Length: 307
Image 1 (cartoon, helix red, strand yellow):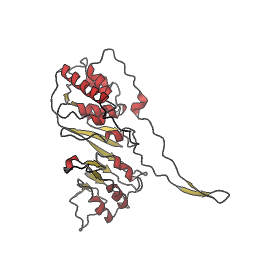
Image 2 (cartoon, one colour):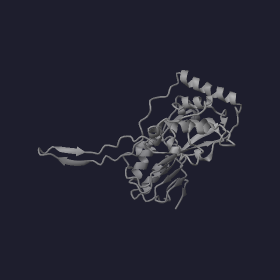
Image 3 (cartoon, one colour):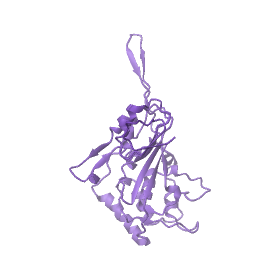
Image 4 (cartoon, helix red, strand yellow):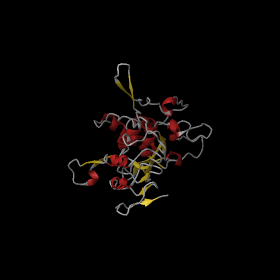
């Protein structure tokens, strides 16, 4: 299971209700009519060990068998469906946000984010409750897993002063929308950080660890008690790519892969040995490594070791 959370700086602007409605609709029509369209959705990130076995038939022909990965299981937000019923007419901001769901990776509004006021009474209109029916009602059994992750990504980018419950979104690694969320570019006022926790995952191996290259916002990875070895960490480090695009300023370079990895936990990974250090040095921001790695005197890593 993994969690994605926003890191943002609050800036109050566009508080007037008419200004903020026009502001949201400006972005909706910009995305709708511009030629800057979202690219084809990347395939889901699936860790799977095919578990190949060899057999032979009566003619002596060798047959290699493997187990295919399971089909994509719909998320709770898909099984729930869109059954929201209103006894009032939602305001313009509701429709604007709903229209932006398909473009969460293209919302860059900078400092012009909208301050989200907290309702003073249950009868007062709440934009969050209209977008996420049941939110804020302790008797509704609301769960953030029932919210489309694209809708959550739009909300945390557009609004400030959000409740603490919206700071992190738990999402399966194989969710079909996860690669789209990983394409949300950080700004000086907003960024998404990704924490992946898969301790004891039997499917994580040196062969399929390359699938994690799609997690461009990965900041923390817990791969404890897995079959991962130093070779797998080295393969993951080779997914760090940078495309210069002909510019001399590094800030303008497009970086692909887990460049933001800061914490790596490898507890009880029995296949990990001192050969892992050369691979760890490839991650420029890595500062904390788990206890199954033993510090080498010849290592140039400036890291903290947790036990």
